Length: 179
Image (tube, rainbow, N blue to C red; front, side, top):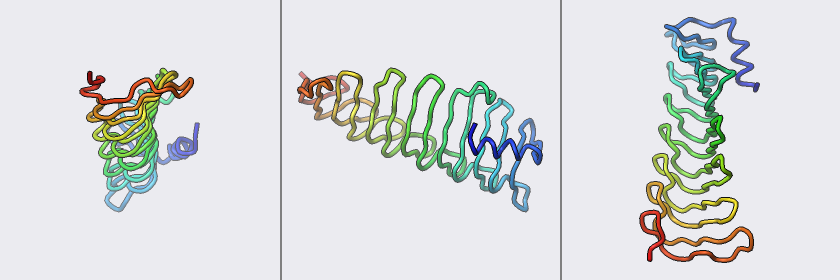
């Protein structure tokens, strides 16, 4: 599968039962998960990576979906005090992908989101939504502009990807071109 998961499988010989979870890895003198290790949650989710005082902290990979053969979501990146925080990559089984910055489990900072239909948004994020300057594009058009709380707002420039002709140049208000 990959190096992190392989390392966790090797650690299974040293796993410790915690409630209905299984942990294999390093612990501190208080018996807390601390250092490198992997945890299998009761619902089938897995985390493999670094821990600090029983919290995901540092680089790791979270797999959700109730078993390794039915993974629905994967986050690979930095964690801080149990939250996705720093730079990371999120992907779903149905084709959604985000690569970029995270703060407290939300896209925040600069990032690229790719949708299953092939469209994408590349730009600034705030609290899990496009917010700031960005580029949204699909197979036919490229939209340069500003977003506020996930909606297009302000000056925008839309071009055709086929011939780079200008389709729209103007102002968006509440996600719609102003008349």
